[in-house]
Image 1: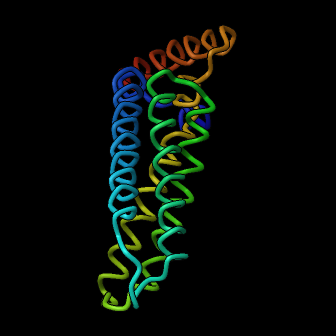
Image 2: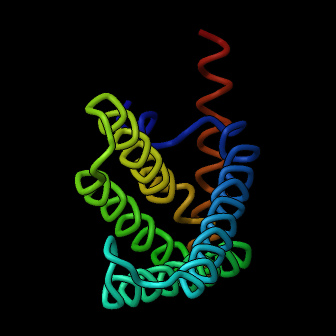
Image 3: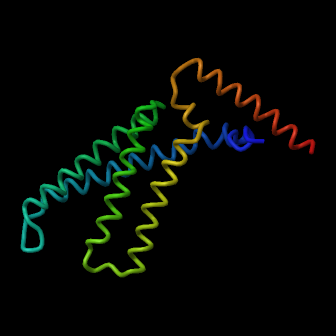
Length: 168
């Protein structure tokens, strides 16, 4: 019974495993490109009474950091590299946390917008982290032949469980 909870049905493993990684890859690419655009826009901004040169430099540094990280993780996710999976998990955690913290410093945000936007960042980051840490998704990112044989064993066990559940 416990194995049934940890082993998803074969349909999900075959079809959703690669689609989910593809969705996260596209999302990482879009996040990388948007932070790169923010970086380019920030370099054209001039300091004024609302923002100092040091704050602009900090924003440029953060946008550069996130754009390189997300673009690098999107490339490595397409190649199914485990370090890319970990890189994306790290960057999405930091990015979501930084955005939630930044919401508290926005002077014109209402309480309801604060809650909605905080939940958006927390749920988006949390779902990504949860998905990339599923056991069958972790196996996609392992390039070890021993682990690939375990993946095929999981498929066989899951198909057996699917056939048993159909008979019940």
